[in-house]
Length: 405
Image (cartoon, rainbow, N blue to C red; front, side, top):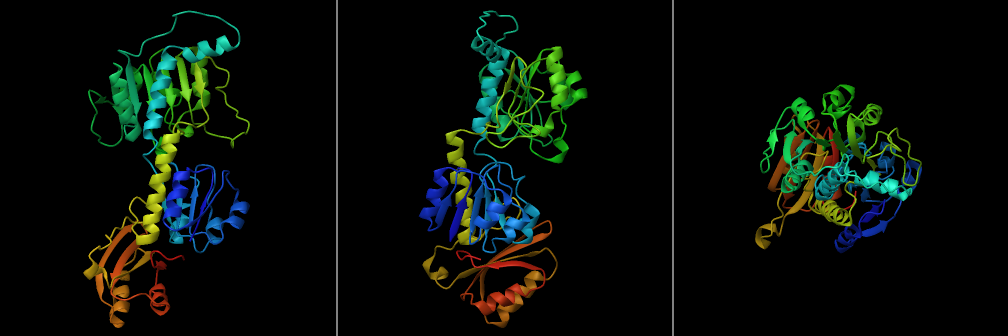
């Protein structure tokens, strides 16, 4: 049982895999497709962060691969359709770095409103300019939060504790925290002193802020984007920063991001009171440890029990492991991933019944084109039984949890 971890994933993950009986190889760098194809052979679990691309060719090079883990929020670099077609579960962690992102946003709000970053930059170049012009307390200002999920709601609490008024806009119906109140997107743009974006990577969020939206904003507003690079038109943002319409911005994500150590190009470079950071919103040691622990735990549970809760591509199936020694003594688990078409469950049950195998417990769930079933049966699965289950039309993968392949 081999685990391959790339991109300097927290050592917490490696430790958990080793304690669970896996052999772990951990690399600090990302691998390109050809390197990964050569390296991934024989791997049961693959862990990456945000730079490694998992293509169909990579998946084909690892027939024993059971799951892929994105030790981050985004799964854009993983071909999820190809993973589903091969019965490979994909996991990520959408929550563990939320506090880190919220804290950075709060810090940048203060830095922008006090023009601290601009003053520091000028002082580094030898210019002493002690002035209160354009510098403001955050107390009493209105913070507009676009996207009121785990990050946005935590930021709401932090901002209100500092005396800010909070308004938010979210497509989902969510419960307001504290005295925050929901408003329309237009009202948020027109009334906020600071606007911060915490939306996901769905296509509907592309170009969320462009020329028309900037024109609706108050003069002197500050913008923070710690979500996705493609949600803001950077050329329009640069124009409105140069004209003074916007008093400042803090940008952590960009439409095109180079590899680590690469050359960064942006129309925002060199502008005063603009904080640029290299996609580090969630990059704290605490966040990486929490992510390492969370994703590895999900992957270990899936490998050993078949439980697919929180998978981003498979149906969410969960069947408790029976700890009663009397009832569990004769139970053996098998899982079946298949196309979501009528008759699959009946075909599986007929195969088991024809062999005199009793089903102790079973659970089935579907998700779009996929179906997933977990069975506890009273007889161990031999190769003949597994081949019969694999021969059921529309079967994608049959697996005995705890075993490779």
